[in-house]
Length: 396
Image 1 (cartoon, rainbow, N blue to C red):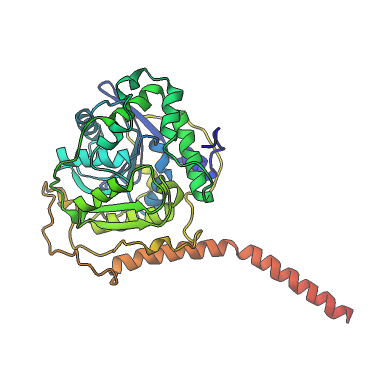
Image 2 (cartoon, rainbow, N blue to C red):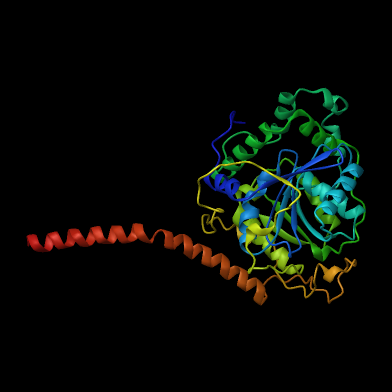
């Protein structure tokens, strides 16, 4: 693992200058979160892993809010057991006057999303799970010193957490994502780290969910990941009817290293479960009046997100099968979570609905935007060639 913290990316600096950070105290817990997008849209709430903070989903916040979705990204506060997590997260939602939610969790965040969906089934309308697991026993066995984690110095906890990230050379996007997460780990306190490690090793497993598999998307990477493949396979086996979104590469942090694919799959998921974007609302309107905003004055950067078209490795050839379910995942306020319409979980992924084709067109439009950005360079080159031709002609 490369030591030191790299300079913040330009798009992240711009994100910090545009999106307010909220901090609210609920009981003895402080919640740190971003909330961006129209409040009339049911939110997608992003829950990070051990090494993550609310900031690691900044690419999802900017990309999806532009398309009319509301995205909330949270830090995991200092919580020491799983039932405390369920109760504290529910109070957080109540404070924000949010009832129906869609959860996107990665690694430990995915496990916590599953735990909440198990114990509060009426509130969770859909799940996106990435590189996650169903039980903690394997992590507990690998950390026999967990009883003294509260007294372990912060630098040792950081070293232990970062040791799960593979050393060696990485492709540039993955290396950049690792550098960003390392920078986030550096700002976490000893209590923050030890509480997350406790959640990761305390004996627990996910029980049956009342949520239909058709409202679950499993988004995994096929390359190296700190979560063992065996544990990821258990998630797929538990939810055989879930949609699959496979990324060929992306490492532990595909939301940073492969934002184009992740954002596309998230948008397809939200459309499929019935979340309708509100394009007529401005993204910056969803602010919590009772929350303290951050005083970051960072300026600079002009790129919301890494635009699609920057890679050509075919990562979109995964197993995701976009379809229209004909169901509304939010049920217009109903507490029922099971689907009431016909079953659309057929095995054919060759037919795209008109909505999915529209999303693909947006994706292609972004590619054309990238190509258009190169037009001045091409024009300058052509003018230079024309000038040389004229000089040769007059010399003749």
